[in-house]
Amino acid sequence: MPEQGKLRLAVLGCGMICQEHMQGFAELKNKVEIVAAVDQKEECRTEAHERWGIPENALFADWNTMLETIHPDAVDLCLPNYEHFPAAMAAISAGCHVFCEKPLGMNVNECERMIAAAEEKQRKLAVGFQQEYCPSTEILVNARNAGFFGELRFVHGSLIRRRGIPNWGTYYRRELGGGPVLDILVHLLDVITHVCGRPEPERLSASYFYGEGKQPCAVFCPTPDWNSRDYNVEDLAAVQIAFRNGLVLQLESSYVNQIREDCVYDFKLSGSKGGAWWRNGKAPELYTDAFGAMMNLTPAYLPSLGRPDMFRKKLDNWIQACLEETPLLLPGEIGLYIQRMLDAIARSAQENREIPL
Ligand SMILES: NC(=O)c1ccc[n+]([C@@H]2O[C@H](COP(=O)([O-])OP(=O)(O)OC[C@H]3O[C@@H](n4cnc5c(N)ncnc54)[C@H](O)[C@@H]3O)[C@@H](O)[C@H]2O)c1
Image 1 (spheres, rainbow, N blue to C red):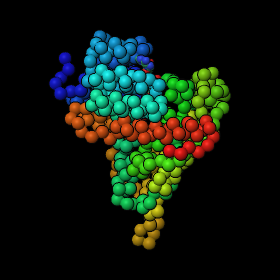
Image 2: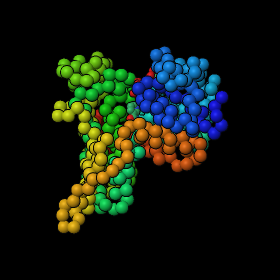
Image 3: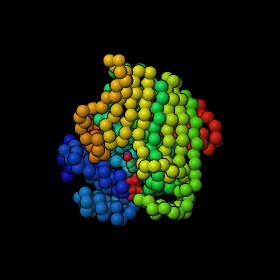
Image 4: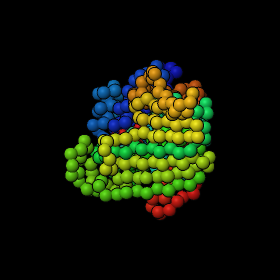
């Protein structure tokens, strides 16, 4: 029997990212109880049982049977992107709060319908970005709020891999929600717009580049065994977004790209009075003029910059909102704000023109 006052939660999709969620829930066990796990693959259900102690009679192969049998308070969606929408709609209509891994949906229409359904049922819908919870990000937000940057002018962000096509899941198929734009550029777009105060986008242009992913791997690399036969997503995307406040954002994102490093995940921000360099997993640097000199600032101490802390905090924010109506940092509306740009990026690349927003 679940303990009083805890959120009765079912996990949908017990693959790669679910393991990081389960670790977070284990650390939040005073607030949440995992009452069911759903996965179509038997080996994933077995792992949920053996690794995380989900009872065998709480394991399901499909979410509808689980919802009808268990009646959880909430669901955590760790499903492939194309299944976020149908699973969220089923769960909301069964009266559940929903935590949805990024991106919220496959397009704006799906996101709008998820948000409307959650609103109608008065359920909490959150989208699963996490860099907001990184201390480096918090410092840049504090700096912006204090006017450190002056007017925001230009940001250049990269989440580029040299050879990093996932060799699991559905990341190689566009119609299943794959490709570096939906999979990883989305993180950059989220963290940068968060730091910049979620400015209103005005117009956008994007180019996609194809080729290497469709070929079998011909070099030594960490994940050589991707599905090149069925690969139909971009290798590399280059994006420029102009915002109504004058900010210009350039983004690059790749699974395959001829660069020096295995992976670069960073952004450089410049404003009229100050600038900054944010790097995944590292302390930020801030730049300004002070005391007659060009000064570089770095924090002398930071708490953990690791993923487990960010994941625990993002799940905790949503659990707390479900239990006590506290504010969500990343409600569905943020997922929609990001998705408007994602849809326009895909359209711009396809139609080879600038898209007004
Ligand atoms: N926030 C992050 O940093 C981060 C990182 C990686 C992945 N993700 C997101 O997490 C989600 C899952 O990604 P993943 O890498 O864990 O994928 P995955 O393929 O490893 O896991 C998905 C699981 O869902 C199961 N599944 C698929 N369809 C199902 C269905 N109809 N019924 C029951 N089970 C079904 C699959 O069997 C699989 O085990 C994606 O939305 C992805 O974008 C987020």
